[in-house]
Image (cartoon, rainbow, N blue to C red; front, side):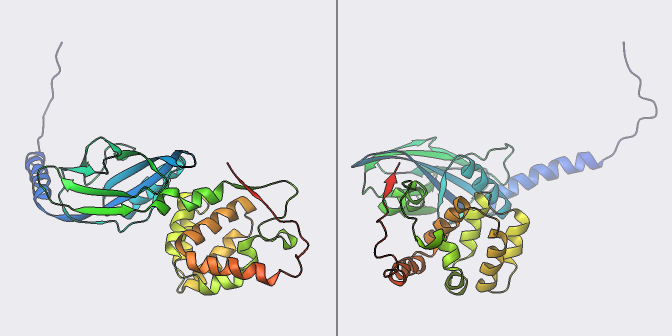
Amino acid sequence: MYAVLENPTFSCIGVILYPLNCLKDGIMKLIPCHGVVLLFYNTITRDDRTYKYRLHLYLLPNIRTVEKEVEREEARHSCQRIYKPPQTESVYFKKKYRINGPQIARVIPKTLLFESHCPLEIHPFIEININGEKNTEVNVSVHPEDKDITVWETMVSAEEMLGLPSLMSRLKIQPGDSQHFPEENVHFVDKNRADLIRVISVVYCVLDDLLSLGLLTDEQYDSVRSQNTKSEQMRKLYDYMRGWGNDDKDKVYQALRKHNYRTIKYLENKVPAEYRKSHASAKTFKCILY
C-alpha cells in the first residue's frame, strides 16, 4: 500500500524559520536579563521550642501573569508568600542555578533551570525543609551552577518564619466569650473603616494577597488598582467587601496587618481605650491556638 501526492507544493519558509528559531534560542542564552525569585512557606509542625518549616522557592521570568499563576497555585496548598525584594542580578535562560540554604535545611532538588516559559502546568520550584528552634533565621541564596557568584539572596527572620498571619487565622473565640472588639460584634475592618481608608499606605500588596486567596476576581483586582489614590483604592475595596462574612474580613484584616503593621497596631491599641468604660464589666475573652 502506498499513497501518491499529486501536484505537491513546497514552501521555503519552513526551511528558513527552523534555523531562525534555533538561532533565537541560542541568542537568548547569551543575553542577560533580570528574573524574579518568589518565596512561599508553610509551617508543618510546631511545639514550644522547635518548628518544622517548608519553603518553596521559584526562579521565574519577570512576567506578572506567571507570578499570579504561581501565587494562586501556592494558595491552594495553604502556603503563604514571604515578601522579599524579588529581582535578581543578571541571569540567563536555559541555565541551571543552585540554591543554598542553612546547614539545618534539606534542599530538594539542588538546582533549577531558568526558562523563558514553562511547558508544564505547574512551574518547577525548590523545596527547602527546615527543622529548627523557634528563633531560627534562614539565609537563602541563588547562584549559577558553574560560577561562585550570587545572583539573589535574602534572610528570613524568625518572626517571618513564625508566620503571624497563620497564627491569627488559627485564633478561635471560645463560645460565649466576647469578640475581638465586643461592641455589637462589629468587625475590626468595619469599625475602623474611615481610618483605614484614610491612612493605609500599602494597598497593592494587600490586593495581591486577596487575589491569591480568591477573595477578589481579576476584574475586581484591576478595578481597585485603577483608582487614582490609595484612599480611593481602599474605598473601592470596601465596595466589594459589602457582602463578605467575618471569615473573609478576617483575611482582609490579616493582609492589612501584614503589610501595614504599625498602622493596624495603632488602631488596635486605640479601639480598646475608646470602649474601656462601656466594657469595664465585660468578660475577658480568651483565645485558643489550634
